[in-house]
Image (tube, rainbow, N blue to C red):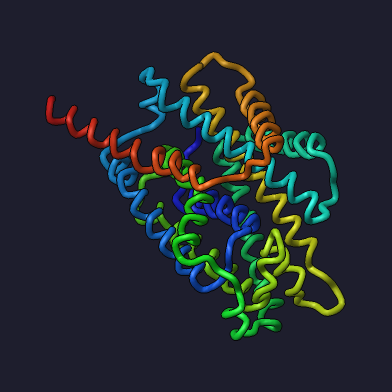
Length: 334
């Protein structure tokens, strides 16, 4: 796979965060915002072992090529599961948001075709597409701010329902599947200042807080009545009186979902290649497994639970810490 810059790494992870923000169904009051800040503080702590590990010269690709199969298989299974969840989220949104397509199968086929083409171009091309999309996302956020500014009411913030800071932190951590992606993509990031690699955390926190604040200030208590508070916000916050901007947000939503599934496809196919170098059609296999996982999750109605925090902590914190300790012991023995 090609090397990427820290800026491209930030864009890839931010797009994944932005997609989860659009799927936000949690509370949006001030306690929830405090919980989001706590959640991002925990994320920063979880990333420390990975940063130290890569600073000491670790390479996940080299580790996988040394015939270590268990860890790569776990990462592949996790990425396939999260890709399946992404399919479920966009299938559910197609019903709730009146997207211009219907049917889970046709949605999966169309997204799959785009993902296959994008993933075939390699990580560097995908990262450039992510950078372009991040710019488009920034323009969309400006449009949202212009529309929301005219309808903000500070007194409405107190009307927004919230279960508290703890629930906000748990909700934020449940949606933090970009952290295991961060650990894997560190192998393909060009060497520079380590702090640059963590820029997705403060920028992601800013995005979360802005959206939650706007939902609370514009919608107030109405936010709890919509399954997707973000899209309820966009339907209310229109920058122009004569022209609605809903289509822009829907386009961005579908684009983010496509890039997110492509990200999981690229990483899954690459790790499969380190385990089985002669395996062909790895991207197709990964996509088919994601669609199968999405079908299963959709059948049982699963889109997430607090237990999904456990694999995030395991892959982002426990695994790097274990590898770091193992590396230290090997250095002492030699």
